[in-house]
Length: 105
Image 1 (cartoon, rainbow, N blue to C red):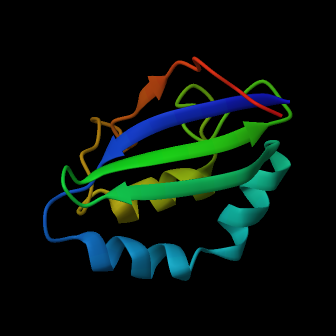
Image 2 (cartoon, helix red, strand yellow):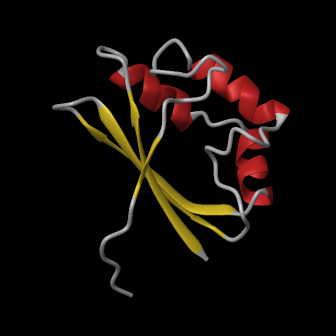
C-alpha cells in the first residue's frame, strides 16, 4: 500500500462551497476512486492559508491526481470544481505532492 499526500489550493471565500460539493460526492466518482485503488482518503483545510492537505492510500500504481490516465468521471469532477480551486489548463487541481518524512504504524 502506497501512501500519498499532497496539497491543493482553495480560492478565498469558497470554503463552504467546497465542503458542500464534497458532502454530495458523486457515487460514480467514489466508485472510480475505489476501482483505481484509492482508499483511506481524507482532505483537510487550513483556513489561515486556504491550503487543502490531502492524504490517501493507493493499492495500485496511480492516485487520484494522476493526470496521465484521467477517466471521464474524474475529468467532469475537475471541471465542476475549477471555479473554486486553483487548477491547471486541463482543470486538474494544482497539486503539490508532499514527501513523507516520518511514519508510525
